[in-house]
Image (cartoon, rainbow, N blue to C red; front, side):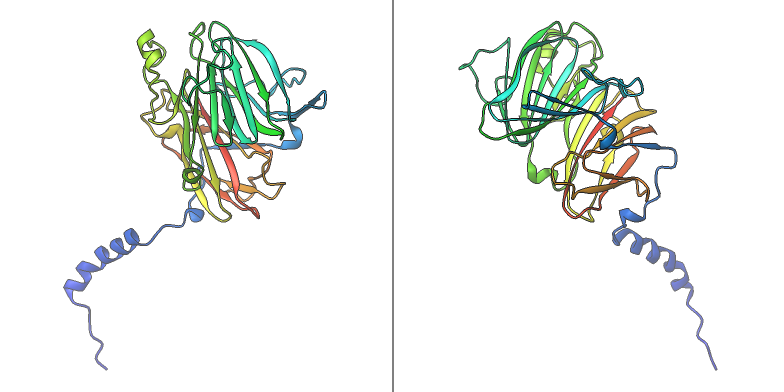
Length: 318
Protein backbone atom coordinates (compact mmCIF):
# COMPACT_ATOMS: atom_id res chain seq x y z
CA UNK A 1 0.00 0.00 0.00
CA UNK A 2 1.31 3.41 -0.92
CA UNK A 3 1.15 5.97 1.89
CA UNK A 4 1.51 9.51 0.57
CA UNK A 5 4.07 11.66 2.35
CA UNK A 6 3.27 15.30 3.18
CA UNK A 7 4.77 17.86 0.91
CA UNK A 8 7.57 20.10 2.09
CA UNK A 9 5.21 23.03 1.64
CA UNK A 10 2.69 21.53 4.08
CA UNK A 11 5.40 20.79 6.63
CA UNK A 12 6.57 24.37 6.37
CA UNK A 13 3.06 25.82 6.74
CA UNK A 14 1.86 23.55 9.57
CA UNK A 15 3.44 25.57 12.44
CA UNK A 16 2.00 28.76 10.95
CA UNK A 17 -1.46 27.18 10.73
CA UNK A 18 -1.30 26.07 14.37
CA UNK A 19 -0.22 29.56 15.47
CA UNK A 20 -3.07 31.11 13.48
CA UNK A 21 -5.62 28.78 15.10
CA UNK A 22 -4.34 29.66 18.58
CA UNK A 23 -4.61 33.34 17.77
CA UNK A 24 -8.17 33.11 16.45
CA UNK A 25 -9.65 30.79 19.06
CA UNK A 26 -10.65 32.56 22.29
CA UNK A 27 -8.73 31.60 25.37
CA UNK A 28 -10.59 30.28 28.38
CA UNK A 29 -9.76 32.55 31.35
CA UNK A 30 -10.82 29.78 33.72
CA UNK A 31 -7.94 27.64 32.46
CA UNK A 32 -5.35 30.30 33.23
CA UNK A 33 -2.70 29.47 35.76
CA UNK A 34 -2.97 31.24 39.13
CA UNK A 35 -0.48 33.97 40.04
CA UNK A 36 2.01 31.65 41.72
CA UNK A 37 3.86 34.53 43.39
CA UNK A 38 0.68 35.98 44.97
CA UNK A 39 -0.48 35.29 48.50
CA UNK A 40 -4.26 35.49 49.02
CA UNK A 41 -5.79 35.45 52.50
CA UNK A 42 -9.56 35.61 52.95
CA UNK A 43 -11.18 38.05 55.38
CA UNK A 44 -14.52 36.43 56.15
CA UNK A 45 -17.57 38.57 56.78
CA UNK A 46 -18.26 36.85 60.10
CA UNK A 47 -14.81 37.89 61.35
CA UNK A 48 -15.33 41.60 60.73
CA UNK A 49 -16.14 44.04 63.48
CA UNK A 50 -19.83 44.84 63.82
CA UNK A 51 -21.79 47.54 65.60
CA UNK A 52 -25.30 48.93 65.84
CA UNK A 53 -25.92 52.50 66.90
CA UNK A 54 -29.27 53.65 68.21
CA UNK A 55 -31.22 51.52 65.79
CA UNK A 56 -30.31 53.78 62.86
CA UNK A 57 -26.89 52.40 61.87
CA UNK A 58 -25.71 48.86 61.23
CA UNK A 59 -22.04 48.70 60.27
CA UNK A 60 -19.37 46.13 59.53
CA UNK A 61 -15.69 47.06 59.94
CA UNK A 62 -12.97 45.33 57.91
CA UNK A 63 -10.32 47.36 59.75
CA UNK A 64 -10.05 48.73 63.29
CA UNK A 65 -12.57 51.53 63.66
CA UNK A 66 -14.34 53.32 66.53
CA UNK A 67 -14.85 50.75 69.31
CA UNK A 68 -13.64 47.83 67.20
CA UNK A 69 -9.91 47.17 67.45
CA UNK A 70 -7.80 44.31 66.14
CA UNK A 71 -4.06 44.91 65.91
CA UNK A 72 -3.91 42.65 62.84
CA UNK A 73 -6.22 44.91 60.86
CA UNK A 74 -5.15 48.53 61.21
CA UNK A 75 -4.46 49.22 57.54
CA UNK A 76 -3.42 47.49 54.32
CA UNK A 77 -1.00 49.69 52.43
CA UNK A 78 -2.76 53.06 52.12
CA UNK A 79 -6.16 51.47 52.74
CA UNK A 80 -7.21 52.44 56.27
CA UNK A 81 -11.00 51.99 56.56
CA UNK A 82 -13.56 49.80 54.81
CA UNK A 83 -16.96 49.98 56.47
CA UNK A 84 -20.14 48.51 55.03
CA UNK A 85 -22.94 50.68 56.40
CA UNK A 86 -26.72 50.60 56.40
CA UNK A 87 -28.43 53.76 57.60
CA UNK A 88 -32.16 53.88 58.37
CA UNK A 89 -34.50 56.34 56.68
CA UNK A 90 -34.39 59.92 57.99
CA UNK A 91 -31.20 59.29 59.93
CA UNK A 92 -27.47 59.64 59.45
CA UNK A 93 -24.13 60.88 60.64
CA UNK A 94 -24.33 64.39 62.14
CA UNK A 95 -21.67 66.96 61.36
CA UNK A 96 -18.23 65.70 62.44
CA UNK A 97 -14.64 66.68 61.63
CA UNK A 98 -11.95 64.94 59.54
CA UNK A 99 -8.38 65.76 58.66
CA UNK A 100 -5.53 64.11 56.76
CA UNK A 101 -7.65 61.36 55.25
CA UNK A 102 -9.03 60.60 51.78
CA UNK A 103 -12.64 59.57 52.41
CA UNK A 104 -15.05 58.18 49.84
CA UNK A 105 -18.52 56.66 49.80
CA UNK A 106 -19.64 54.08 47.23
CA UNK A 107 -23.44 53.93 47.09
CA UNK A 108 -24.93 50.44 46.73
CA UNK A 109 -28.62 51.27 47.20
CA UNK A 110 -30.76 54.08 48.51
CA UNK A 111 -29.80 57.73 48.78
CA UNK A 112 -27.16 59.57 50.81
CA UNK A 113 -26.85 63.33 51.23
CA UNK A 114 -23.44 64.88 51.86
CA UNK A 115 -22.95 68.37 53.24
CA UNK A 116 -19.80 69.91 54.62
CA UNK A 117 -18.31 73.09 55.95
CA UNK A 118 -17.42 74.32 52.47
CA UNK A 119 -20.96 74.34 51.08
CA UNK A 120 -24.28 75.68 52.32
CA UNK A 121 -27.67 74.03 51.95
CA UNK A 122 -29.36 75.43 48.89
CA UNK A 123 -26.07 76.17 47.11
CA UNK A 124 -25.66 72.69 45.62
CA UNK A 125 -25.09 72.16 41.92
CA UNK A 126 -24.42 69.37 39.47
CA UNK A 127 -22.00 66.49 39.98
CA UNK A 128 -18.35 67.42 40.27
CA UNK A 129 -17.19 69.72 43.05
CA UNK A 130 -20.71 71.00 43.79
CA UNK A 131 -22.80 67.84 43.92
CA UNK A 132 -24.17 66.65 47.23
CA UNK A 133 -26.96 64.04 46.93
CA UNK A 134 -25.95 60.55 45.89
CA UNK A 135 -27.75 57.46 44.63
CA UNK A 136 -26.62 54.05 43.39
CA UNK A 137 -23.71 54.39 41.00
CA UNK A 138 -22.43 57.58 42.62
CA UNK A 139 -19.13 57.95 44.46
CA UNK A 140 -18.50 60.90 46.76
CA UNK A 141 -14.92 61.76 47.65
CA UNK A 142 -13.55 64.11 50.31
CA UNK A 143 -9.99 65.22 51.01
CA UNK A 144 -9.93 66.00 54.73
CA UNK A 145 -6.55 67.71 54.54
CA UNK A 146 -6.11 70.56 57.03
CA UNK A 147 -9.61 69.93 58.34
CA UNK A 148 -13.18 69.69 57.19
CA UNK A 149 -16.52 69.10 58.93
CA UNK A 150 -19.21 67.18 57.09
CA UNK A 151 -22.43 65.24 57.58
CA UNK A 152 -23.86 62.24 55.76
CA UNK A 153 -27.62 61.92 56.05
CA UNK A 154 -30.26 59.65 54.63
CA UNK A 155 -32.98 62.18 53.91
CA UNK A 156 -35.14 59.66 52.04
CA UNK A 157 -37.85 57.29 53.26
CA UNK A 158 -35.83 54.14 52.52
CA UNK A 159 -32.60 52.71 54.01
CA UNK A 160 -29.29 53.47 52.33
CA UNK A 161 -26.52 50.89 51.91
CA UNK A 162 -23.01 52.07 51.09
CA UNK A 163 -19.31 51.44 51.55
CA UNK A 164 -17.34 54.07 53.47
CA UNK A 165 -13.64 53.85 52.60
CA UNK A 166 -10.65 55.81 53.84
CA UNK A 167 -7.14 55.96 52.41
CA UNK A 168 -4.04 57.54 53.93
CA UNK A 169 -2.83 60.49 51.81
CA UNK A 170 0.73 60.74 50.54
CA UNK A 171 1.21 63.99 52.46
CA UNK A 172 -0.52 65.82 55.31
CA UNK A 173 -2.15 69.25 55.46
CA UNK A 174 -3.64 69.19 51.97
CA UNK A 175 -6.30 71.69 50.97
CA UNK A 176 -9.77 70.26 51.75
CA UNK A 177 -11.94 69.54 48.72
CA UNK A 178 -14.38 67.04 47.37
CA UNK A 179 -15.63 65.45 44.17
CA UNK A 180 -18.66 63.38 43.22
CA UNK A 181 -19.02 61.33 40.08
CA UNK A 182 -21.51 58.82 38.64
CA UNK A 183 -20.31 55.56 37.13
CA UNK A 184 -22.26 53.61 34.53
CA UNK A 185 -24.00 50.44 35.64
CA UNK A 186 -23.82 49.13 32.06
CA UNK A 187 -20.05 49.69 31.92
CA UNK A 188 -19.59 47.80 35.21
CA UNK A 189 -21.32 44.80 33.62
CA UNK A 190 -18.73 44.69 30.85
CA UNK A 191 -15.50 44.90 32.84
CA UNK A 192 -13.99 46.43 35.95
CA UNK A 193 -14.48 50.20 35.77
CA UNK A 194 -11.76 52.42 37.30
CA UNK A 195 -13.31 54.67 39.96
CA UNK A 196 -10.32 56.40 41.60
CA UNK A 197 -6.77 56.94 40.41
CA UNK A 198 -3.83 59.03 41.67
CA UNK A 199 -3.76 62.77 41.09
CA UNK A 200 -1.64 63.04 37.94
CA UNK A 201 0.55 65.84 39.32
CA UNK A 202 1.59 63.66 42.27
CA UNK A 203 2.66 64.63 45.79
CA UNK A 204 4.36 67.81 44.55
CA UNK A 205 1.22 69.18 42.89
CA UNK A 206 0.92 72.96 42.73
CA UNK A 207 -2.23 74.83 43.81
CA UNK A 208 -3.13 75.06 40.11
CA UNK A 209 -2.70 71.29 39.75
CA UNK A 210 -4.94 70.74 42.76
CA UNK A 211 -7.59 73.01 41.30
CA UNK A 212 -7.41 71.25 37.92
CA UNK A 213 -7.73 67.88 39.72
CA UNK A 214 -6.60 65.78 36.75
CA UNK A 215 -6.44 62.04 37.57
CA UNK A 216 -3.97 59.55 36.09
CA UNK A 217 -6.88 57.66 34.51
CA UNK A 218 -9.37 59.86 32.62
CA UNK A 219 -12.98 59.88 33.87
CA UNK A 220 -11.98 58.84 37.40
CA UNK A 221 -11.84 60.75 40.68
CA UNK A 222 -8.31 61.88 41.64
CA UNK A 223 -6.96 60.69 45.00
CA UNK A 224 -3.90 61.89 46.92
CA UNK A 225 -2.44 58.40 47.23
CA UNK A 226 -0.75 55.68 45.19
CA UNK A 227 -4.13 53.99 45.05
CA UNK A 228 -6.60 52.75 42.44
CA UNK A 229 -10.19 51.65 42.95
CA UNK A 230 -12.29 49.62 40.53
CA UNK A 231 -15.77 48.10 40.54
CA UNK A 232 -17.60 45.54 38.44
CA UNK A 233 -20.83 43.57 38.29
CA UNK A 234 -20.13 40.01 37.15
CA UNK A 235 -22.80 37.66 35.83
CA UNK A 236 -22.70 33.99 36.96
CA UNK A 237 -19.92 32.00 35.23
CA UNK A 238 -18.43 35.19 33.79
CA UNK A 239 -14.83 36.19 34.53
CA UNK A 240 -13.46 39.73 34.83
CA UNK A 241 -9.79 40.65 34.91
CA UNK A 242 -8.18 43.28 37.12
CA UNK A 243 -4.76 44.50 36.04
CA UNK A 244 -2.81 45.26 39.21
CA UNK A 245 -1.99 48.95 39.48
CA UNK A 246 -4.40 49.51 36.56
CA UNK A 247 -1.32 48.93 34.40
CA UNK A 248 2.29 49.94 34.76
CA UNK A 249 1.94 53.64 33.95
CA UNK A 250 -0.63 54.65 36.57
CA UNK A 251 0.91 53.89 39.97
CA UNK A 252 4.30 54.78 41.44
CA UNK A 253 4.99 51.61 43.35
CA UNK A 254 5.31 48.79 40.83
CA UNK A 255 6.41 45.89 43.04
CA UNK A 256 4.67 44.19 45.96
CA UNK A 257 1.39 46.03 45.77
CA UNK A 258 -1.46 45.39 48.21
CA UNK A 259 -4.80 44.57 46.61
CA UNK A 260 -8.01 44.12 48.62
CA UNK A 261 -11.08 42.59 46.96
CA UNK A 262 -14.50 43.03 48.61
CA UNK A 263 -17.92 41.52 47.82
CA UNK A 264 -20.67 43.80 49.18
CA UNK A 265 -23.78 42.23 50.69
CA UNK A 266 -26.23 43.12 47.92
CA UNK A 267 -27.88 39.84 46.82
CA UNK A 268 -29.16 38.19 50.01
CA UNK A 269 -26.24 35.80 50.12
CA UNK A 270 -26.65 34.41 46.61
CA UNK A 271 -23.53 36.00 45.06
CA UNK A 272 -20.09 34.35 45.17
CA UNK A 273 -16.77 34.83 43.40
CA UNK A 274 -13.60 32.79 42.91
CA UNK A 275 -10.25 34.58 42.92
CA UNK A 276 -7.29 33.75 40.70
CA UNK A 277 -8.77 30.40 39.58
CA UNK A 278 -8.05 28.98 43.04
CA UNK A 279 -10.58 26.35 44.05
CA UNK A 280 -10.28 27.18 47.74
CA UNK A 281 -10.51 30.95 47.32
CA UNK A 282 -14.26 31.45 47.05
CA UNK A 283 -15.67 34.62 48.59
CA UNK A 284 -19.28 35.07 49.62
CA UNK A 285 -21.12 38.32 50.23
CA UNK A 286 -19.42 40.40 52.91
CA UNK A 287 -16.14 38.54 52.45
CA UNK A 288 -12.93 40.12 51.26
CA UNK A 289 -9.38 39.04 50.52
CA UNK A 290 -5.91 40.45 51.10
CA UNK A 291 -3.69 39.91 48.05
CA UNK A 292 0.03 40.51 48.46
CA UNK A 293 3.16 39.86 46.45
CA UNK A 294 1.66 41.12 43.20
CA UNK A 295 3.20 43.62 40.82
CA UNK A 296 1.82 46.29 38.52
CA UNK A 297 0.72 44.60 35.31
CA UNK A 298 -0.19 41.27 36.92
CA UNK A 299 -3.66 40.08 35.95
CA UNK A 300 -6.03 38.93 38.69
CA UNK A 301 -9.01 36.92 37.50
CA UNK A 302 -12.34 37.16 39.30
CA UNK A 303 -15.05 34.65 38.38
CA UNK A 304 -18.68 34.85 39.50
CA UNK A 305 -19.67 31.41 40.80
CA UNK A 306 -22.91 32.17 42.68
CA UNK A 307 -26.56 31.99 41.74
CA UNK A 308 -26.76 35.66 40.78
CA UNK A 309 -24.50 38.45 39.62
CA UNK A 310 -21.79 39.59 42.03
CA UNK A 311 -20.81 43.19 42.65
CA UNK A 312 -17.08 43.38 43.32
CA UNK A 313 -14.93 46.27 44.54
CA UNK A 314 -11.14 46.27 44.10
CA UNK A 315 -8.91 48.51 46.25
CA UNK A 316 -5.37 48.50 44.85
CA UNK A 317 -2.79 50.20 47.09
CA UNK A 318 0.92 50.79 47.51
